[in-house]
Image 1 (cartoon, each protein chain N blue to C red):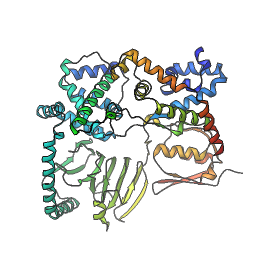
Image 2 (cartoon, rainbow over the protein chains, first blue to last red):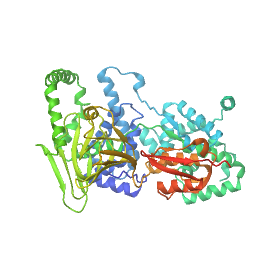
Image 3 (cartoon, rainbow over the protein chains, first blue to last red):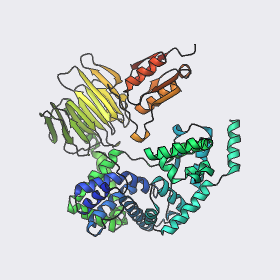
Image 4 (cartoon, helix red, strand yellow):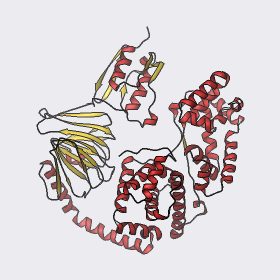
Length: 202
Length: 375
């Protein structure tokens, strides 16, 4: 099977969505295979339980299929699916913890994301230090800023799409992004010097 | 572009236009940025540093195999075609999943205990049963409950198994497999040639019996050629790992039963040739090894005064093949070549002749012989 990734918002994708709404099983399969991997990766940020993430995605598509007659044909498919999955998972997480009576306040709205460095791209010492620094600063961002940065820079969503996914106003998205970027750009001289010294001594 | 003149490296890292150029360059963006860099050479260091950071920084994603995705999709697509099942799935969601209710959990655990008891009681019997099934597969007899497909046409034929594994059966070949896989193994037998794409399930390893050879996999794709009329049986791996052993192997039973892959293990681009009359196995490389990295991660094989050792490393990584060489000798050998469009063997020959070395394929690995370049 060919898992091709059409450009987000391309007319091709719209067409598949319209055929899905018209009830064509081939379009269901195409839609699911196009988006499964990125939805799985997005969903995994909310829960470490792989089976739960897989089940949620499966449920998501079945629910959409069931109520396809009431869905709008004019949407950006990628962000719509991400928003729906996020809602669905949050809903089941809350009910799940209630059922097992072990609800902890931290369970509400987890967004766990880790960044890694692919070293074969790194050629110079300065690039190594910059990348390590950026990685560290990313991991220190508060949860909502992390999610905004992830959606904007690693999922290529625009402001309106992010506001749809995170269920906040576009203005809030801009604010969150601005704060995050400001923090990420701060040139932290002290740390730079320490890193440099450590490197000289190794 | 003037706003970029006062940028620091980290400003570039988070600039959308810059990221777009680095991650998905177009002819236009290449032109704009390269022109601008020519006019502002003093900033080029900052830009290249930022560029490496943008490329190197990745979100660590939870892994899921394409097989697994395929399996879930075909299961889901199957259920939309059956209205009854679809309804039950939807009510599950609505009621926060049936199996999470406590009475159901209680009932399920009681059932589990009873089942475990029964299983212990009948364990010996059922085990014998599966051994005899192997025996019948070994002898090539068609047992009841087995489906046999024969490809008499001149076109390859597609066969789907119950676990959503796909087999492409070559002409003049036949395969038999059970209607439903039960027990700890999935077993099929093949006469002739087939390409297998096996869905991953480490709990239920997949076995192919073909003439004198047994191939065991956990989830991967590979080709087997085992025509009754041919002197050789061959197995070629495209993705994943498979293990191969002869039916005459004295430790056959433990190898079949073990959860791991034992015997001769093949990785991508490796091939085993079993000489039927000599009962001898030789491990080598497939004729045309393919790059195994996903498209986006394939490096450019453009070398400029690069140590030959680095070139071999990057090629070995791309093809998933071990290339053995003397690092100390070859890092003194500079190489300048562009090798994007050559096959693996062409790449190796060109590099070897450039740095006065030779190479051979031994046991599925590439071995480079060199005297070094320090003269």
